[in-house]
Length: 132
Image 1 (tube, rainbow, N blue to C red):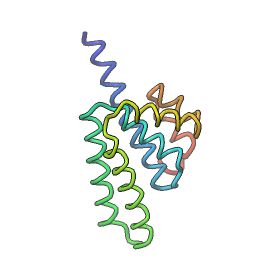
Image 2: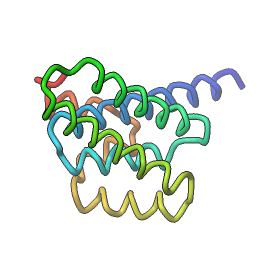
Image 3: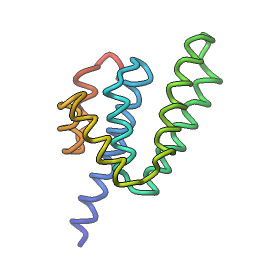
Image 4: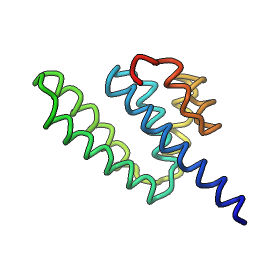
């Protein structure tokens, strides 16, 4: 039993890391495939985990608005974060939404999808090392 709990925890942590790294790529690069990957991760997460992701996005937007010196960049990044948050909240936990997001991701970026299926966030660091 402890083995399975450990496996589930690691998978859960990996999905959170996948989400966080996809969000980073999306907000800093505007890459739509990374946005789709972040949404897929959020849609595939459990209710508590998804709520944590939503709260993290809110805090992130708030931090950007407080700490970013360039007004134009600050607004652009905060808008990306908040639009992502809104989309995750909008379809909070519906199975059909998750399937649709996975299908969309498969069309946009097979490598991100394969990494999502393995709960492997390293794809973002390999493709965008300058962001990490």
